[in-house]
Image (cartoon, rainbow, N blue to C red; front, side):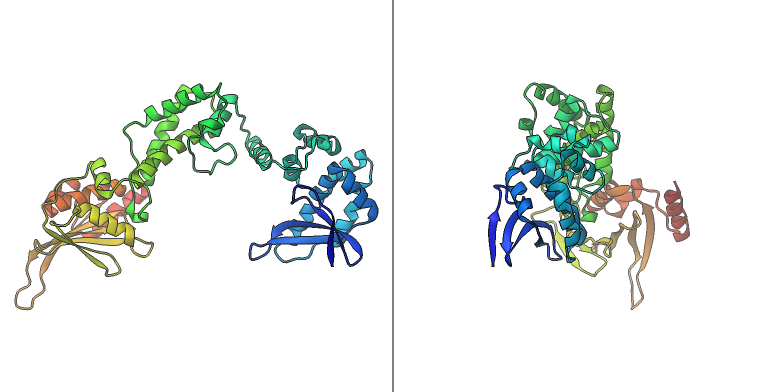
Length: 416
């Protein structure tokens, strides 16, 4: 039979229960192998209960000291009950100076105390009992998150000025730099918001006219990494010139914001419009084409359909491309020509029928190889072929018919 003897308003602070005629502290901490919360208990005495009931600071200190033991138990281990019980008298019944000395020797959870209002300055000076004079039952998780973020920055030697901090809050990256940035003006104090917007405008001007297109080789919503890096470099250079005093975190968050927004615009643009924006659009002169991948899947396109050949092909690539499916072909059976894209090698082959097979003989083909410069290069080649066939690719060379020569060119490019 389990009865609750004492609990506080915040449900996460350990409670006291009576179980099997004895008092126990019960707390939730960590998770099991199925990601369900774990619960731990260990015995306490009546004197410990009295302190827990009357002294919030001591209660929180005990919690902070026991949590590392819970972490050590892992997903299925048992709590070291002897170690937990050994903490009771030193934490709850000792003089403040002795408590502070104890916490200099044992591991403890700093974030819990900060979330419950501990004075950070006193805490960092090792004066824990004094730090918890401002403690509250209700926690503020954001306060602990901000402390951890500032501590990580301090470990990297990063110092933020007021405007740096305001910009990081504006993009939502003050607490965690991996968060997708967004524009949150309400997070900035009104006095600093105009200056923040002026800085953002500097970043916007720097990348005006630049775009980050999609890269179907990596999936339907993947974006072009090279275009991303170009935009990020451009924005960061402009911001550093205008604001040389900014921390690296601030400069990066602005480029991240510009790039994320550009990439999202591209993801939400229909493929036809995306191709037009990339400058590779146009009306196909081909009447029918066949698209195939390395797994033998085929898709037909006809000119009288609702979409362009280029858009249809790149959608096919986005749907089918994978680590084991990186060769795609566009073939014009009527004209006897086609191109084969080798995404794994940044190369392409154009194939032209020289002589049709007659009387059971195999047809004769001319195969020429070329190197491709990223997804933009592939887009230009695909569009040129759709518009004018293999002949339209002459200006996108050099083309090599000798395989050994082509392999030497590939190796040379890798070495550069």
